[in-house]
Image (cartoon, rainbow, N blue to C red):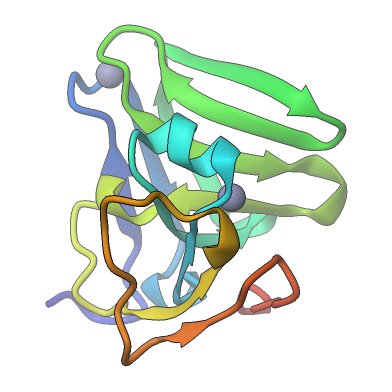
Length: 143
Ligand SMILES: [Zn+2]
Ligand SMILES: [Zn+2]
């Protein structure tokens, strides 16, 4: 496990998208979202960390594409290998990072599952993690 003051890095399968977060302790803990959009974006449900824009940088955005379906939310994915990577919220100065794209997620754990009323029918929610039926939960990114 790397030291908490070192950068966290991650990217897609093909390497066309690579990113860094300036310090590992600027990553938010993981929120799992079961809303319909997250299920479709990820093919299952989204487990996302995140950080403030000021700690985030793209090391390679060669194949990065953005799609938006609602105001102020942009989904970032790799146009070559198909990886789902980000939800960007430009007005909120934060970006969600799909935890599975981090090179090392050893300091992170799931703290809540949200939009559980929209969860898929084929899997079980973990009983030992907080569950919220809708989006009424907020976990700020570290300042
Ligand atoms: Zn890729
Ligand atoms: Zn969602």
